[in-house]
Length: 436
Image (cartoon, rainbow, N blue to C red):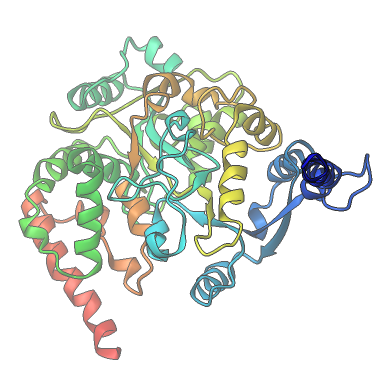
């Protein structure tokens, strides 16, 4: 009996001895002591022009600190949408792909990308990029491409005793005071964009309709189901917009004015106010350092939302749902979202930060006040012209009527403008539809 027990204990002891001898092999494979782990490798697809030194900084840091190596494949800008669509469709897309927000819906994100809505970094975003159902499918690299606002020559205003306009009526009063002062200066300069007659009008319509309302209007205009004469919310907006032209407060060449011309005239005190992108205002400051540029949010009607509008078509990184390394890719994005990595990115990248507490991002002087009052509070929505520009449609040029051209009609009103819009949009689209 004693011999049997001894044999049993010997066998058990041998098993435990074997386990502890083999434990390092199970945990570390066959590597020798001191040999480094092979990094996990992720593949990333990015537009050639967007593969910046800021991204390179983050990817290098990711490999050194987290052991996650990144292999980047760049595609020429004009080929990127086609390549991305094809590779998502045939299942050969890499682990992470660059996408454009918020027009990500065109790629069917629910089918191809991991839902990141519950990631721990979401609350740290300044402007979370969501789809109509509140889902987030990508880590944004910026919070916005551009922000729209009213920019004015503060020194000129002070010289003539004009206060900052904080409402539409105050804007009209400011313009009137500039005209009465007798100085030869344009009260307000406007210019057209690729997809909308004036940024001012796009901003006003967006603030009245709200984010979802603006998106719905673009959809109706795009699929030709719209009847402009039935868009009741536009009547007061167009009425207020027309007042600027009836009173002669807008630059005469507002439909053909180039941004370069506006910058030139503003820096030479020939323009008192400009409504448009902060990128133009930033260029004004760079051309005339020291100019005292004021800025404010401008509601065109009383029921307008207290928000900024702009282009939120920023670039982001999405995780391919069918990737075998999707979990690792999600972990990598979580690391990239941290303050240390965001600061590393913005050391080599210009633009508005996507995350709070990104100390290395340089906020343009023309936006410093609005950054605190609105952007940091998430009070920014996509402007309706940015939605229109993002539409992949052969009718893109005619998604919106050229309202800026209608102001020269004999005695124009909001009613006549919308009636003309309905007539011209249908006539302009008819030949295109017949060819199809």
